Length: 267
Image 1 (spheres, one colour):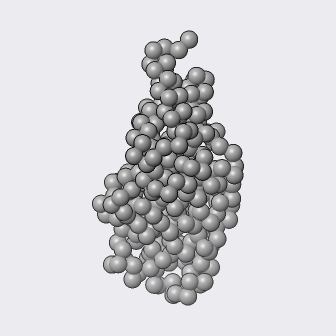
Image 2: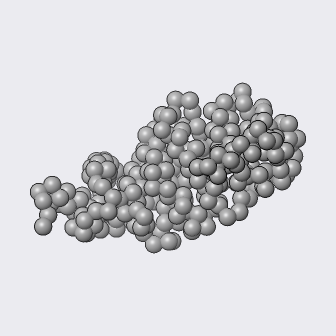
Image 3: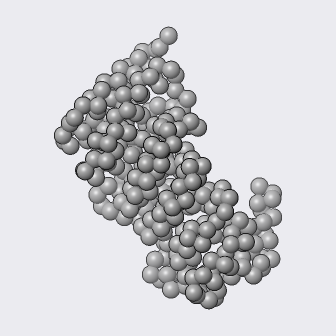
């Protein structure tokens, strides 16, 4: 039997979900989406059956073209933020089928362009946080959305800023590291943004990008070793034009790669 708190939550979720299924103007949609996001953020994982049932109208509304492909950017970001909250709640099960999840991932990757914008960056940070928490990139890899992984790498390394919250920068590092560690094969296209970030000339131009790229490469030194030299050669630049960690990995220097490898074994 539901307690008062659960009964209140299911009532509010159904009410908001039903309203979202109706056609509404932007100034009505945004408060509804904010209300839904607030309700979702208060829910724990593995919700009870009544809570799961009360989520159905919202799940249906959020995946509809009228919301997922809304012309207003604020609405679209709010929709994605709600969807990532739902994925957190339903994890490890995805809330939608494979084709729908692929579409969601496309929009999530595109949303990270907003990380450096004044408008929309807070929602983009919320989406980033949930993608990291739920390890959504694992689902993305399972669905073979490799092009979207490359797009995420490019956005993180291009739009990272010194004024981003520390947890946001950690989420970028965590997502990129997990994608590399869990990939069966690492393409030159995936490594190219990383190498560009630690190109020596980029250190002064974009120091935050340099730091992030270097951290990710260091985290994945053992995994990257079989692929890195080939990626350097295809870049058209000399090995010494990159950060020291790249040279260390390619030349198998004991003080870097072997120590890191031992740390991985002991983890």
